[in-house]
Amino acid sequence: MFREMRRSAVLWRLRARYGTLALLTMLTLLVGCGPDQTKETYGGSQNHVHDLLALRGVPRTVLMATHFGLYRTVDGGHTWAMVAGGAGQQMDGLMIYKLVESSIDTRRVYVLAIPRTDQPGDAKGIAGVYASADSGQTWRLTSPAIALPTRSLFTLSAGPDSAEQILTLLPSLGRNGLYASDDSGAHWRQLPSLPDAQVTGVMGDPQRSGRIWAWSTSTGLYMSEDGTRSWRAAEGIRGGISSISFAGAVVYASGDAGMYVSSDGGSRFALANADVTFSRVFACAAQPERAYALAGTAVYSTMDGGRSWQRTAPTSKSASTITVDPADANMAYLGFSYPIGVHATVDGGASWRSVLP
Image (cartoon, rainbow, N blue to C red):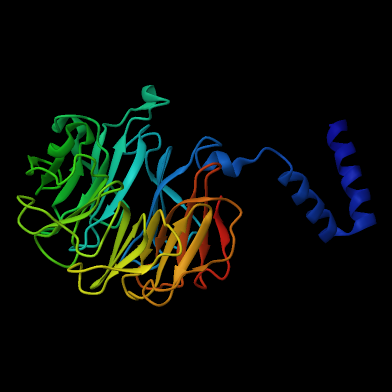
């Protein structure tokens, strides 16, 4: 009782001296000096971003795959909700690794969830491929990792023929490591040999049924139009390729020599810019001449189809991944590793603001 009386007396004297508004401000600042709860909300100091995906057909909606959970925002990053990976949720205790959206049914999203190498004992969910039919709000396991010959799932991609078709790479199998499923992962079939034993990425062509792309950071970019029974090297490209991105008939390919661009759906590429070597490129589906790319610690953008690139405003950390709003090239999102973070721009990179944590 006496403690409460003393506390009330102190508050009365402070209110009398500084006023009610100033007192409330002081108390707010004091509360803010306590333990940082924000970082714990997003998995703690060891969490980091593995992948970001801005969804088509759902304005301002972005999915974020992290070491400790899958998050979703519907307001451009102002608020985030954990939709998988948490206690009692699908993918409980798993590392959320790769996000893929179907180009045929944009409500259909897939994610790869695997055990954490640093904390494998935390896994309560089943490792494998999960699918969402409602733009990432709810998820279900469609393929446990044990359904494939090895559990070394490396990446995931949407197939070109249906919303239920997905592709995955098993790097330990070399040229024989490409598998496809036509029913969201319930059944898998091994595809014919890859064009290179060190393929680092595959993607179904979002514009043409039956066409599959594969690329290697050491040898280049390849395309198949017959179910991978045969491959041909992409015309006009020399050296390794690290990333590709489609925007209608325009295809961007970042490589050792610079940025390659095709304006005819990939039939032929030309070296559009050799000034910078980019590690990742992401184009805007609605505005093919607009794209963003990462190069070391810098972020670049183009407004002329890849011929010229300008550095965007600097960010406080080095981005590890990037995604662009499919309907508005002025909106893009950067993911950061340690500590976890996401920055967003609404002005084409002229400025960035932190939207997480």
